[in-house]
Length: 502
Image 1: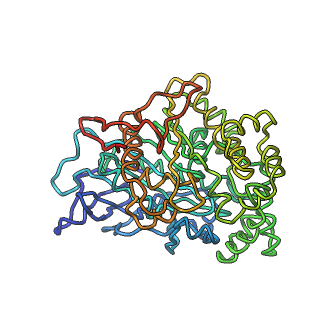
Image 2: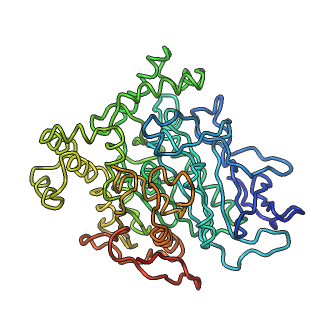
Image 3: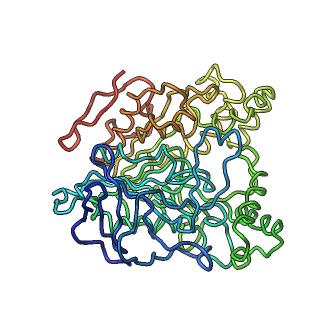
């Protein structure tokens, strides 16, 4: 374990490039509007190349002098989203080997000779989504200045994706992407005080595959003590069958004409690995299943029942929820919804089979959503199975001593057909609707006041452990965003946090 970072923060003579000494060396960031300091691309582990390609993360080498942290570091190797998703989900690629890096936004006074706050600031650590195969901390919508502005030290993390992070091999540790996330949280524990953050007040949050990762962190013994609170947005704890994940590796090996081992895959050229991965995953879908990358039960990292293990962490306050029409991102852009509507009752039957629901559940769904067509009914059934049911169960798990807060995001996108779809809430949580890429999914004229309201709830949860509504009691409606019941501005730690008004 690296020694904790210490010493007085430094600053260069120009006053615009704050410097902080971490456990591995000095990093030089940038000061932006409002005095927010941002440090990008700080390595928390060694580059996963060569013999490290499929190994557990190792500490980065220390460096002499000052390391520039003014730009996002390399993103994990991945393939682009296919159309039409590439037009909705920005996913920049930054080349380079040193992809196990993170970013820090803080309003703490980092100038030379300035004292840190007498009370360290709460910390939020963001773990991005992308089906464990895409995404990065460099997505513009994840810019962390609004959190820093409102008194939170925001950290965002890159981790290995696809076959590099989650391919299952007989000669390599499983769940390497999860091990990367744990290594990043250990870096936060050892270094965040130098940025004005409190290592004892860490909230982890993530969306989609990031939320699935948060569920795994709740369940993983190695992550115990690295965070105090957790936010799960549109993702629940899960593990995939090992045979299903191994099937991806076997099919890739057949394409590459090499053995299905980490040793053989280490010798393959990275572009060839990614091309084989993309070809194999084209055969998978949320409707039909197929080979996929995902977390697996493993004696060294994750128990066989992550939902049960996560539920047993009853002392961790939780904020968790979903969007009202998650499925529309999965089905609408490709025209699948039109096809499913044409299939009529067959689509509903497929949804019932894939979701494991009975006919009574379908009747109840029809009564609840009388205007829903076959595609929407199928989508809601799948969303119940994948997200709403397990998240409700986690929120109301027996023996919880800490509160759970449940929400639903119901504002519909301005992009035709998307509705209140998966990932739509991200620009609202980060309060980054002014970022041009936010309109890709939200469309024009998304309500800034709703972003202020939702972002403030996340800040309040990080600061006070209470987002501003009553804890989940097992029934009753969740807190609605984009529906009725918006709240007035609230006081948090002596400061007024913006909340939008109708």
